Length: 114
Image 1 (tube, one colour):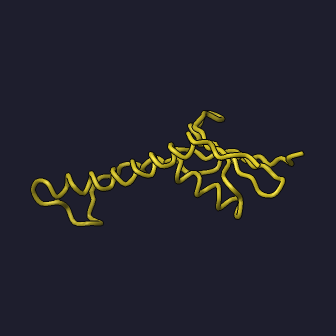
Image 2 (image 1 turned 45 degrees about the horizontal axis):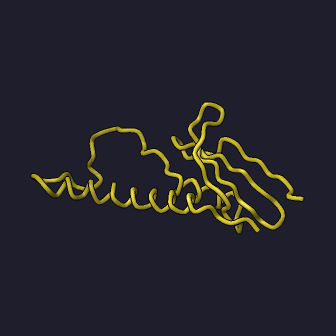
Image 3 (image 1 turned 120 degrees about the vertical axis):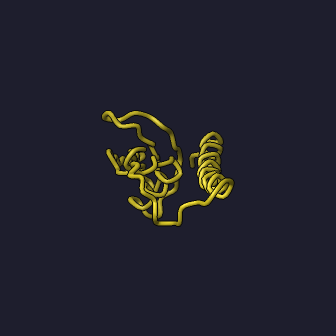
């Protein structure tokens, strides 16, 4: 049985904390000065926020239900910045590459572990 890397655990914790801080920071700025626009009345057409590795893990686990995450790392695959999520389920090993820009799976590999 492989151990989950400590670095991966720390990275996922930091990503989750950053996501929470980002949402709280926006609310704090909006309430700090003047009147904040009402929810749902935003006029900007900014692109969707990039996907975090924590969200990429959720996407990968939906693709391989019941699998255990063994490693998570950022890399570049086919011109996309991706989060590579390695999963294990039984004797199968899965590599799921999730685009950090769109949240779509750009590559999927499945191998039998001998």
